[in-house]
Length: 224
Image 1 (tube, rainbow, N blue to C red):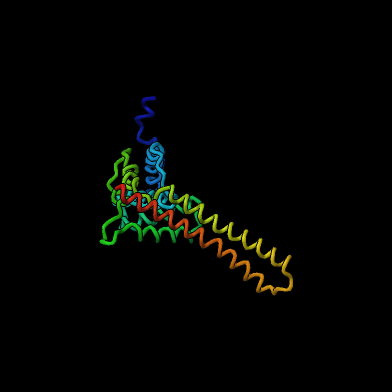
Image 2: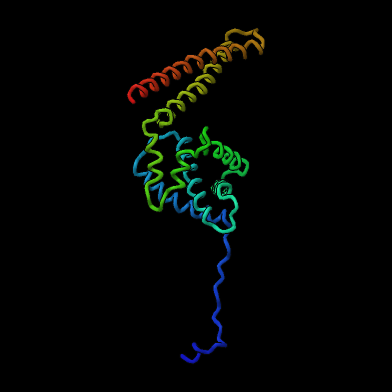
């Protein structure tokens, strides 16, 4: 046995590991970091509007992948590589390629402030360390901002649904009433009656929702 091990003519088979592209490497790194960070965020039970929560998380993740891409070989533009990784990740998560491209363009705009500096989520993601609570830190900056709160989003969502379904219901009832009890009207006149009645319902609901939003926002500013 010892003679075989020392025989120079006996060659051991090497296991070749396929190369991974910088984009794929960023995606893998980003997913690993995000899995840990989302666990920390879940423990905090933050209540943010879904769109704000998703945008902030994606900007943070972009910052993480941007920093990681700078340490990879064969990467000329780490920032663009990170955005390419974000788009790849979205597509792999079943987002349509066209929608993924639009989302990345939106994130590019939101990643910079008016003065050219990086957005808060990007900066914290870029400077984050393994297993820290950096994503929690990002969200904690916005816990007192009522404009991105989940309560405000639910108010908006309820108001939108009330205006949509309520307006359609009122229009249907008016059209049915005019058609059944006021025969002889033209189709155009019946449709006009339905649209006007729907508008008379939607406009007050919109104004009330706007007033509630204004009062809540004013109260929140006074409490700061």
